[in-house]
Image (cartoon, rainbow, N blue to C red; front, side, top):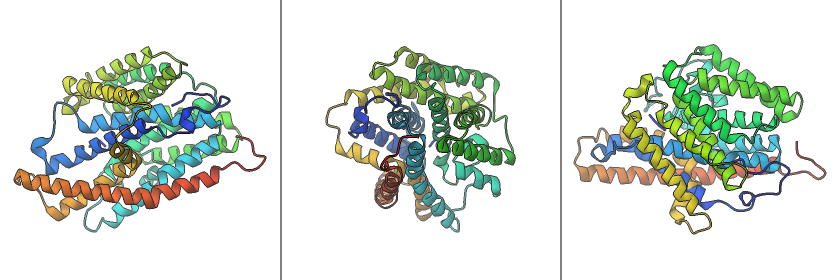
Length: 402
């Protein structure tokens, strides 16, 4: 069911440490978040008696991912001041593995049927092409793909804010989206904008807006179009409106934390945002879901905050290599694990009533296979694709940033 990464310096400033060193503590947080999501999907079928219900593993992993996203991703745009480079980098980072998983799921459809939530028409193709799945009411071929919708929406907003010079207002935006999440929980029970047309229109605006922003022609108009598209879709197109807006609030809170760390913004907006996210589902139609019960939801948010703070405390210190390795392959872990678990379930059958030793053994086998497959997809898909992306963005002699 549940199922990802800072804007610190403006484009004209000198590179921050983010540009010269890999932040191991952020890798560790990604690794923890990825494994939490794996556990969320594994435990109900292989270890149901050990699944925790006092907090949500899936929500914990997702919110941690998004907090890290807000902290780190926009930095690359501000550091280089190059919208074209930012989007090429993001495309080569996300799409190759994403497309490979789509091929995997479709290829396994003869044995593991494609989930019913995936439309069998052109709107699904358009939605998958833009990754705007959950905000246009289209199910992803892999269950965890829905979160990529909000990653993409965040990129669109960050781009629009950067081009229009509004990118330093992270704390204000975090609180604003937090407040909208509360309101959405009160007045919106489901997506307002629905229909096949939404996938096609959003794809057209997505492509046209990015073309304007990246090419430099009508850049400001394109930025406003992308920003309007992002806000409209996340508020009126999300399957669960309050959750979609709360995700954006969490991401901008991550950016605000980074600004505070660099001395360019206060920290108190983060606390306000956390409180707003905590109360967002209280009056929502989905308030009956177990993982948004006040005690469970608030505990989950508190654990995310403590984990992120603990990660920050590890800055400049040695981080367990296993955690940084998990962070390195976290995108593969996140996208690959669910199709593999479904395949594994077809092979083993229902193990929910099996003896605990059998369940533990099968869970160990499943996790080992997931880790192995994720390491391979990182090595042979993710890493080469990122290298190709760097070739495309390598400065040419005499070139200036766009």
